[in-house]
Amino acid sequence: MKIGEFARLCSTKISVLRHYDKEKLLVPEYTDAFSGYRYYSSEQLLVFRRITALKKAGFSLQEIREIISCAKTKEETDEMFCRKEKELLSALENLKEARLIMTKLNITFKNGKAVFALNPDEDFLSVCALAEAEIKAADYQRVSQYRVTGNEISCDVIALGEETDLPDLNLPFKNDEEVVGKWEILGVYAVREDFYDGILCDNKGFYGGDQKYLYFLPDGEQYWAFRWTKGYLISPVYNEYETRKIGDELYMFVSLREYECTRGGEPTCLVLKKLDSNRYNPEQIARKDDIDKPFVNDEQVIGKWRAHSFLGYKEGKNEFPTEEEPMEDLYFKEVEFFEGGHCRIVYEDDVFEGDDKAVWTKNYLLRKWNWSACEYEIRTHGSKEYLIIEWKSGDYRYGGYDTNYYVFVRT
Image (cartoon, rainbow, N blue to C red; front, side, top):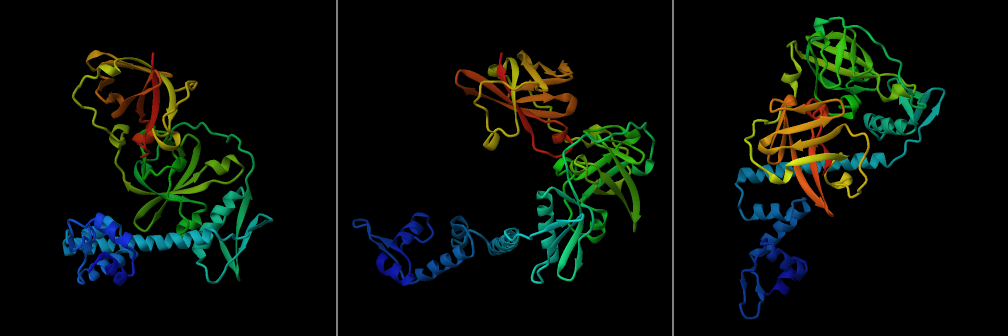
């Protein structure tokens, strides 16, 4: 049958069939070489219905092509369906969350409490999670568990004020062998009771990061931004900790003096679980790159480069700058590349030179003292050459963050 008749039987448009032909999803049984007319068989109706069903289920045209062409084994096809089912279930949960977020709770703040209604058709924990965002947006901090009274939910709150510096301590080191070793970060909780109830955990560690572990090194030795003395985790402010045995596991509860405390609020609760008592050092726990790359020459990079600016990302929101005015007070001051892979690096307080400290090879600056291979690239903008180098600070080496970037201009 011709394409028009086949389209009517399929209840679709001719343009759709032409698109499926182009995508090799549903190729006509026969195409006339002279007229270009497409002809389909009645058996191909089933193929069209399968394509339609798979599209409604959310499969992409590429996935549909793989399924109907039998390019996948039965096991692989079943795996594709299982994966798609998980995606759709996740999308449904996201839809529910979005619908909830679009619903204002109309929280009232009075006499140190936040109060809002509980709709019996809504999930208690989902409503409380939404309340967290609204309480923070209103510049309050929750300092108690959520309580249900009738059809109302309430909690104690503190109104946050202007940001101020925290008073600090300066304590000498005092040992506490019980805490030496590796700890798993279980999360940050508004109050400790949330941990016991197993609810409303912020799974991020310090500074909004996503690091998974924290190490207490022997003798309180510092790594990244952390050191300790008995009773305190120093980051660099002093955060009181206490340990508690729960079952066979040792837990640590840290009174985290972060953003809320600087605005007149109370510490939040960082919860850690001890994994081992090994006596680590900074080198053992650092994220290490391959710094033993063979030397490959790159004539274009040889010379002295002066720091111009700092980027969170090379592309996108903070893409490569076009302004000519350099930034002031950059920590990474300059870098010079010499023949044969030698180099000299100048920071605010330090100068590193000598092959035992740092070398380079094509596309990489290899900083041996902290095990980081910093990829570089050269871009031309206007009449100037710019050198963009990965900045792998402690955030990258110990915190698991993505790398940042420094931009240099040739001097």
